[in-house]
Amino acid sequence: MTNQQTNDSSNPDPTRPMSKNIGIVWFRQDLRIADNPALHAACAACDAIICLFIDDPCDQTVSQLGAASRVWLHHSLESLNQSLQSRGTELKIAQGDPIEILQQLSATYSANRLFWNRCYDPATIKRDKKIKTALAALSPESFNASLNAEPWETVKADGTPYRVFTPFWRMRAKSLPGTKPLSTPKAIAAAPDTKKRDNLFLHSIDSLALLPEKDWHLGMMSYWKVGEKSAMASLKRFLKNSVHFYANERNIPSVSGTSGLSPHLHFGEISPRQIMHVLTQHKGTLTGLNTDEETFAKEVIWREFAYTLLYHFPQTIKKPLDKRFEKFPWAKNQQKNLRAWQQGMTGVPIVDAGMRELYATGWMHNRVRMVVASYLIKNLLIPWQSGEQWFRDTLVDADLASNVMGWQWAAGSGADAAPYFRIFNPVLQGEKFDSAGEYVRLWVPELTDMPNKFIHKPWELDATERQKFDYPSPLVDLKESRQRALTAFDTIKQPANTE
Ligand SMILES: Cc1cc2nc3c(=O)[nH]c(=O)nc-3n(C[C@H](O)[C@H](O)[C@H](O)COP(=O)(O)OP(=O)(O)OC[C@H]3O[C@@H](n4cnc5c(N)ncnc54)[C@H](O)[C@@H]3O)c2cc1C
Image (cartoon, rainbow, N blue to C red):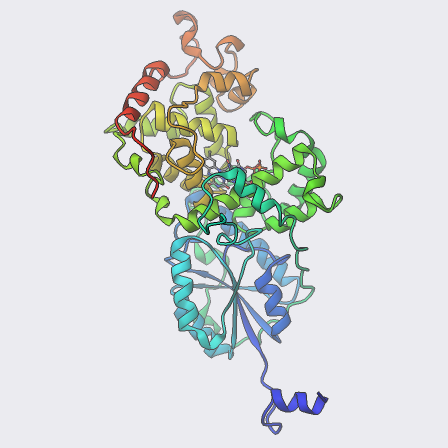
């Protein structure tokens, strides 16, 4: 085909100038410019790009966020904006119904293309389908930016989803580390500005009012560095210093033995593909990894297992996957105990340490998440949904898929869940994973001078000695409450029904 023919076919009327492709890239849970398939595709297909973030009242990325996540989102948007500015454009912020906003934008800027990266929660899937139909004129294209494989790709031979992690992992591992991450655009041509923009956009990220009026967030954010550069730096630091001890140290809450990547992953400041690529770059394949590295790779894939479960069983956001638990006889009128748990005042040191770490930093160690969840559900008999809701409000990494899976796992009602009768003993957990009580002393300073022997069971200390510590007595007796939980479980015991 000659050049003349090419020109003729793409521009049927040569007397008119060729129209430019103006694309909209709608950022959601993909707040990065590296390995961002939507941005990458837009840069390849368009002459100019509008980078957009929408505060949509129906969206998981904003309105459903808890207070801690809103703070993170604020800083993450700031960071993304800076990256975009250094490449010649900026992040525009709009608020309202995405269909209306995108329609107005395409009319104002003569935009003719739309790109985004997919989210997998049921509300967003439903909304996005609607948008694809309503805005078909913009030829919307969506991509996978947040998982190594799509939730519908890793299924059993009969096409049904996995409910157990190990075979899911084996299947997923076959295609890892996957393709190389996409390159970062060096420059992004901004769409020419228009006077009408004032009606379309908010003036700044501040206008979203994601930061609370009271300044509690300053303390929380002193533990974190937000944005894609920090995410990659954390990954590299972890791989250099900690991954070699991961299989053991990931269970010890007093050491920083884990990557701390969860909020970065949630907001898409780093992609799992980037993680797998950096993790395997010296060996090239997953099989070359040592046990610690492979354990870390598996944890990253646990997150994808959670996304797969959410995709196939969307009802589990609110309801137990194992239907027997719908009839579980939870304790009534537990507001006082729930409050004590939230405030880290249960009288069980490892539980209180975890809950206070969460409140102060917006994060809690995974081992302790399991302990505090088990205590709430089994010792206090408070429904897992109350714990899930509190975590959603206070975690900077609050993630619908991982949070729901974690809570259902702890309740014994989810996929690959711990059997209900396996009830964590918080004293034994503390003695095993925080043997010198360092973690407890860090977050429960009232117990600093508690002898090691009693650091995880201060109630066993002689009564006169105990009075010297300004620390609450346990809300419930651990042995009795364990028995109460087992009796409650007996009332729903019958063959599992997960359909
Ligand atoms: C009750 C409960 C609630 C939880 N809620 C959340 C949540 O809202 N958001 C969240 O990201 N994680 C949640 N988790 C999982 C886990 O606790 C965190 O992902 C982990 O503590 C994050 O720390 P890290 O990044 O240092 O993890 P690392 O040990 O460094 O692991 C690397 C990455 O793997 C993923 N990962 C690790 N463990 C798990 C797991 N058990 N389930 C799913 N993904 C995992 C995370 O994305 C994590 O960043 C929950 C666990 C429990 C028991």
